[in-house]
Length: 117
Image (cartoon, rainbow, N blue to C red; front, side, top):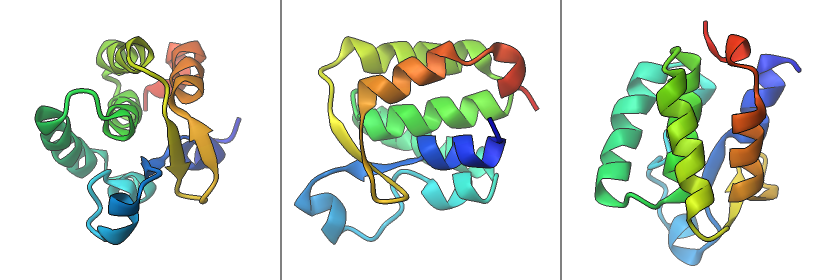
């Protein structure tokens, strides 16, 4: 699968909620991830996860950023953490709803060779 398409499919903007829509701040580093600025995304997302260790959007985006910089074991641990929590419906950057567990399972099923750059 094309990396750009994969990235678009996995970028998770925010859980579907009024507060997420009302808050224009890019808490989930979607801009940095889309621009392949993984170092910037990691710093932002680690701060979000430090505040809320079970935020599925932050966990999934951080897992994606880690995968892109070759931090595969940390990436996989975050995908596994998402699966330990209740499933949630999230909104992708394309505006399509997706289940957090489905994204996490997809992340775990990717061959490690595809995640390293």
